[in-house]
Image (cartoon, rainbow over all chains, first blue to last red; front, side, top):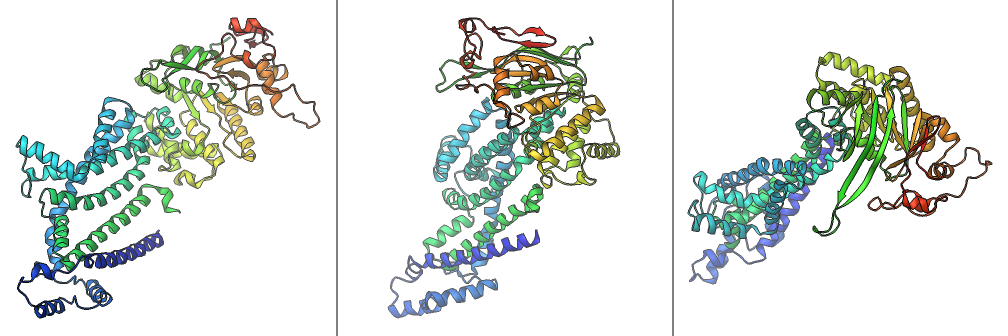
Length: 305
Length: 321
């Protein structure tokens, strides 16, 4: 078990290294930040001096080595735009994203899993049919479109909820639903099909024969065995929450790391882009690692392999 | 004669099937059609037949996993349909089951001890210490090592898993155990062990068995009486030795002939059956076996032969015997 986790941890580090190279190169392909931050009247000499000050006149390899050496010590460089520590800028925006993602996740767990289970138990019933339509919509419609339609309906036409921004609970409702819908749909369908699989097995039949109450058959025998797929899906979902945040935060002007990243890309604020992408990758790797640990906890068969 | 333990009386189970478009007419699969038999206390009734003949559906109806569409099942003289509450629980305790695949019969997330103890817990009057003692006793009965209770099912071989499934079935002291192909998923070398274990248990506890199998030798070895099923119907029933010595129905004869002779030098039987099993959606008119029967005449297509008593306790559904 310990060895398995250690191996997974090492794989995670390699992944992070690869991500850092890709983001480092990709962000530099579109040009440099000087055109955006310099006075339009600046001379060629001024430009060259500024470029040297930011360290952007060196070769990519050199720049990357410097960046990596500093990053390993926790220094992700200065934001070109905010003129502050890029890591600090990221941390400042993180709570907003966690608030949004956490709410979306919570909604999914509280809604999608019970509905998925009930859809499987009452297969073909009215709940199953409605859930199917909701899930299909969530999986087919793009996040930004759902967001815009919701703003149009609930904010502009009905006037129930604010159109954008962060603050009260009312601000949270639309972005959380928008962000969570896709994952919710996914989770609901996976829960349903995992439960259908398990409900068809002999041990569930035999549990009924033992005279166990139906509720216990469904939750103790069936759900516990369906949990592996559900946990995997929750892991994948938390990743889709991070990537979905980029779009959702832009649509709803939510001041989180998703929007920070998008802005930083447009401003060619390399240190911020690198910091955001790498730290998001760290979170994704951590979630995957956590899912592996949870597997071993819920499925005794994994421990011995 | 005492009242039988289980009495299956003109049992029907039809499944509605709608193929293709939603407005297509609903048709019915006649999985079990007018089946009647009885099992006495401590007796083994074996049911043989090809795959798809309705054996498993029959067992599921008896186990109340499926609702019958006609007929009744009586246990101890009382109809089991519509049982609820304490009476249903009592029936569940009295009738247990062992299925074909021991791997899917045991929840992979539960320790063996918990699996075997669960029927005791479901009925809920034993303390946890009593349950543990009972689990240890049951595991010993089925011949598993000490300490098996603390392991998970995946740590055991197929034969051992089937022993665990049997131990669980015994936990409530059942009076009838439905054995649905209990050994066909096991290695040949393990089969005899499990069969002998089941017979030992029957000798010791007097539990009746409903044995469902497609292997004729297994059914012969285990059963007091045997029923032969074809396309949802019982075509012949009788005491095991009589039925094997002198099969009456042409289908029974064909089944026995299709089995390999015990000695290679024995004369081969008559040619095996020609043709395919007809669709249970549209069974042939009259006798269901007539499309493949070497003895079929016009009468067979017109009237359905009833199951009638021939001699001793042997019943057969055929116009030509």
